[in-house]
Length: 388
Image (cartoon, rainbow, N blue to C red):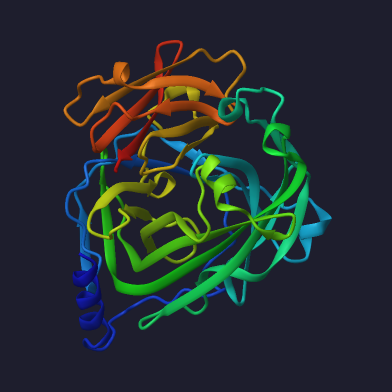
């Protein structure tokens, strides 16, 4: 499919003149704000290359509407450079830590400009057998010397952009048995993003209540990954230490290949499509629920939470968390395959510092659904891919 994408792109870039194509710029692309999202694994067929297209996506969103939450900037350190931030978790082969991504939208484009790593610490007892062993992060804040460019205005036919941004996380490892007594470590991630506009036209999405309004859209193919490096006491970390933590110098992680269906006057894409690492198949569709006139599917719950599931695709495990749930919540988790058969018994679930850790080594390669209940009421459904 990668070869087909490149072929479609060549045809697109050499095709006929424009007829009513939109252009995204600072005048019609507002700053990113909280929005509701719903998803489906009924992928169907989806055009992603061409001109003056009429796109009628007959796949209906099926999940309850959740919330992708962005916050206004209140920290003076970021106020001059950023206008919104998002709470996230970095996950690299089992090493995870919390961080906040800071964004800006201005005449130059929509960029990720800053990083905030809150103070945090994690036991390494599962690795060493000693619960007192730990990794410790002090609070860190910085503005990226080169931003991660999400959109570089103006965005129109022929648009392509590549950016490389460097992120650094500093922490200390305290594992005396390894000869590490609060030893300073750096994780350096060079995030590579390569974007190309592949299509434009009008798009409708079908909902349980009928078709959505018709939107003029631009389709952006985005290929992203990061290259990791690790340093101990200012020097490249030794291979035996990295192996103990499941890491390698120069490893390629956090591959995120996507299609974005953007329209004017809203920062949230009408549709976001996840692609697999080989760019050969769709793995999930995510809709901007506020643009579809969709009911929330959660009744009086009116979901006020955001969920995270990483890594996805996964080989042996993933971490799942629901942020913003009331303390009185009594959550229960079930896992189903695509046939609807429950396969929870093949997975090991346990609490961790980052959320629910779900072992997937007992599952065959494929797509699965994680369903979450609170007091026996279904409140969330996530899809994940097992891929080895």
